[in-house]
Image (cartoon, rainbow, N blue to C red):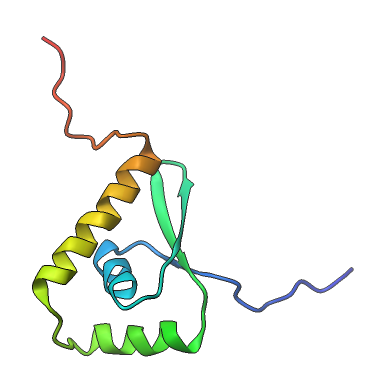
Length: 92
């Protein structure tokens, strides 16, 4: 039986704030839909781990840039979901 390659090809991220921080700093993910969830996949390179350390150490960021990037990420997620935000009103 052949041994599978154990190296991690992409890191799955479910936190949109973390994804926005990575994107704001130039590390763009690949988005996939898995069931009803959207997953951000990042390559596990030095840049990813450096930005992860910055994010988890509460580094200061320009809030307007962060909010704009977060809105962009949410827009991408809603597009992949097919526009269903879950907030739609039921017909009477």
